[in-house]
Amino acid sequence: MRKLSSLQWIVIGTAIICIVLLRFVSTQSTVENVPKIASQEVVEGHSLDEQINFIRKGMKNEMLVLVNAFIGTINTNRDDVKRVQMYDSLIRFLGKSEEYVYAAFLSEQKAAKNNGSGSDWQQAGERYRSSTGFQKDEGNIPALHEAAMRCFKKAIELEPKNLDAKVGFGICIVQGTNDPMKGITMLLEVVSADSTNVNAHLALAEFSVRRNAPEKAIARYVTALRLRPDYYGLHLNIAQLYEQMGDTLNAISNLEKYVRIENDPLAKNDVENAIRKLRANLPSQ
Image 1: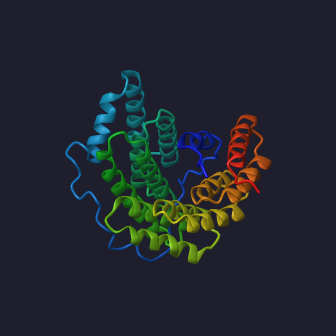
Image 2 (image 1 turned 90 degrees about the horizontal axis):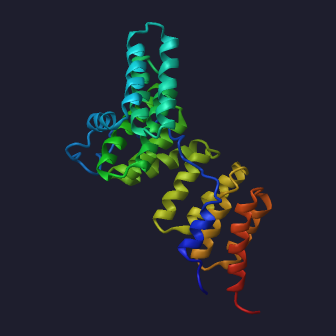
Image 3 (image 1 turned 60 degrees about the horizontal axis):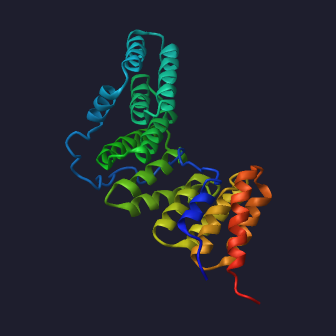
């Protein structure tokens, strides 16, 4: 059987509803003794402070003036509510400007300087964690993972039952330390505490894919779909795994399920074309 080319699957991928794992992690145990960052020595010039300095030096002058004005007002304002509102406005602005690391840095400052809640620290951790996916220089990533884990750990200390914080913490441990199984254990603890935690199931599915365990990944995706039918884009993930396993009929079945739900005509057309190609390669009865 001739498999779909990677290009064809990339085309299909354009139709996928992005399930971005920005919410993550937390219960009570395994937050002490965090494993060491896999890259023990952060390369010179790649620490968090140096990354922020590099970002600021690269900003257009008018943008830097605006950011400095915001920061100056934040630092002199004694009204806690207004200060939080200004932080939020600046963080949103930087996020929309694709300055993800700087937005995360200010999210952490907001939590630290305003006696932030566990949710505030979790949001900072999520911003750091998600910013790793936008780094062209991999030397930046260890410091970002370290910052994310610092924030997630603080979130869990303040709110021991914050499962989403524990998910994020677990993901960072898997991706950024020398003890990935400790992160997997955290994610399994979340599922044990709350079997309906979609973020934990999605994270475990992703790691199963990376470990070349497609059957386990499919089971996690199916569970996530049962819990959140609006995540119907997962049918495409499942179809791709079945296709890679050589199970064309189940691949087609999941693509057809996606087509029945999707309203975007371009997305439907891409997937329908993939279905036709798969059917053409089925053995003759």
